[in-house]
Image 1 (cartoon, rainbow, N blue to C red):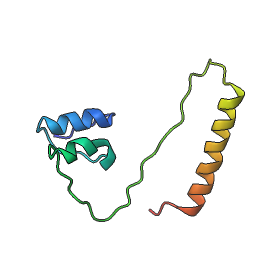
Image 2 (spheres, rainbow, N blue to C red; image 1 turned 180 degrees about the vertical axis):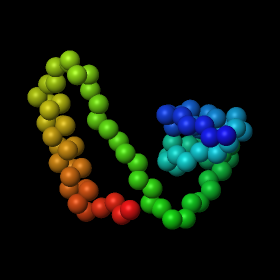
Image 3 (cartoon, rainbow, N blue to C red; image 1 turned 180 degrees about the horizontal axis):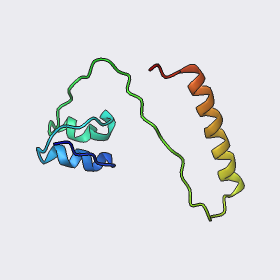
Length: 88
């Protein structure tokens, strides 16, 4: 059975209940790993790519500061993708 959850916390909680395994960023489970409640299994063959999205309410005003932040993030993403192309 495959269970797909949309939150790292939900995934971590499911694993803590001994209901399976999950692939999440190690830092998300740092406390549980340090307390030896969870164990890290090293995966060979990375890096793994994860998509992030910028979202906002379509009808809300965006301040000039927020617009500048969005512009900086987009510029950074373009430069990052040039330096770190995804190989298929």
